Length: 116
Image (tube, rainbow, N blue to C red; front, side, top):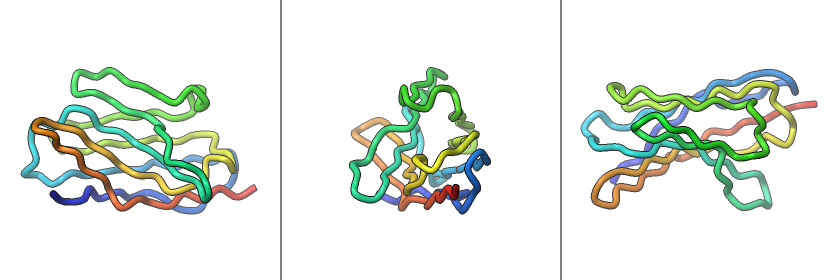
């Protein structure tokens, strides 16, 4: 298996926005669920958002509409638009995909820092 490639993390002021992207290798097919998870220092990794190939979306309840997940199946790409960022949103964000035959891939993570 290969790792996914995330980008878009960085330093942002509270209230600002970031857009994360994740690109899967072009030779990977039959991807079903694509999603984002995050992990803050000293805390467990938690689900942020997922989207199925059919277009359904699932978000962590605490996000309250601030984040939006989207995907382009032709490009094997998933994005996470993060608006109105808060200091508690800081952490390492990981891309994850699930597919057929137990396909289960994770990215290395991209760091999001939110300053007050």
